[in-house]
View: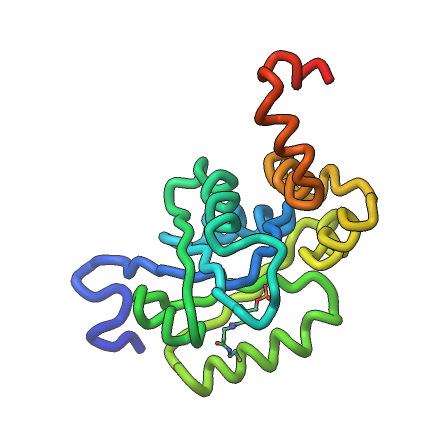
Length: 190
Ligand code: PNS
């Protein structure tokens, strides 16, 4: 039976805000796929980048934020933010009712289940919603992208073009310098 304060109270559907927390170092096409799926089922989706000083990231928080903002500018109900501390506390701060997480393979399940149940213990009202990315991203992770790029492998199709460029610049600052010097037209031909 529906309670008085249920989602149908006063004939209005409740708007569900979800957060999509993660490290996003770097953001990949798998993340983008999940953001697109999440944007279709939630009224508002906040991509929340964790400030994690322990991890020694490839990209600074500001750089990751800029990349994600550029990747999500086409989604009206998606925004990007950063947070410190517990995910449940951040969720409460932005009044989110759900946490979105991606599950790629069975190997993700154990860690994700542990995290979801711990978050539920800390904040029973907050639901974790798991979604599967498209099959072609089921093996994709930020860690693998970093490793591939550092060892000279191609990361084309794994990350958006703009992220690919940022990674190249990050790993070889000479490329950035070269791009800054070259006029745009010349760069296109090259
Ligand atoms: O992209 P990642 O690295 O898999 O994301 C992990 C993340 C950021 C979701 C997780 O580490 C997290 O929620 N960290 C915040 C601290 C926290 O709430 N820890 C308790 C979770 S059980």
